[in-house]
Image (cartoon, rainbow, N blue to C red; front, side, top):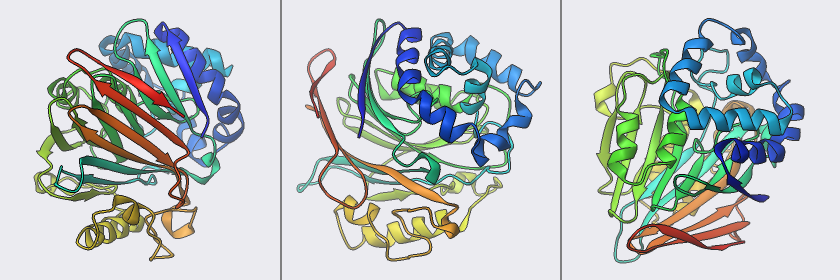
Length: 349
């Protein structure tokens, strides 16, 4: 797993991210089915107010996107469009994967968030880890996609906040702050309630399911946040979440539930009754057509598990291991120790 260090202003950080992911963006994203499905919106009246709302709420993170474009050698408009995927109607709406497991602390384990990051098969091997240290604001460590803001996959920040994201596809898309910008804002939050404040805003264009934990506050929360609402529930027992809304509060909200997400949700919940090892669940391929660990199966919408993250969360700090495939030897490891004020990354491999 490639890893980079990005420091400085928000534009400088974005430029470093763009330089790392630029080649993959130009060669694997621009002509992909997913990007081509968004292209009709390029320069449209629908994108302009999303950009305006995002810039008004989070100007620093729009600077990061501008920097990504500069580093990648791609016009800002094309980069911003990619960061609006999920905010705009497109033929691939509802096609993304991801499976997450949340475990509250127990005698045998610390609080745990484990997550399969599933994307297009064309992005296999193209993601990377970024350790980000802005001149102002919290540092963090995140899995990054080529051309995209950090935050919408899995990450931890130096205040002890963990975030792992599952795509959802309800039919309530609106015009407002781009959901990837909201995810980046969550990463800049020092406390869980600050993060939840972003997800409760009513001026969001779209939303995700967020697996959130605060090590210092000893809180673990599952949050469904479509554009039209937000429900946050404390995790009191083992919980699985795939890619559709499962809370009763949203039972009347129409959504896309592809066969893959339904199968992964059911299989993960069944396995939680059999094992406390989240990797046993996330590496499961018992259903060869619709497995939890995806390898580009046609029935799974060509989703591919790009990386698997395992966060172990305690008041004293967070340990992160990242895996590629079912092998249990991590390809990246990092830890944050939490003191009285702010965490500090203590190891990286």
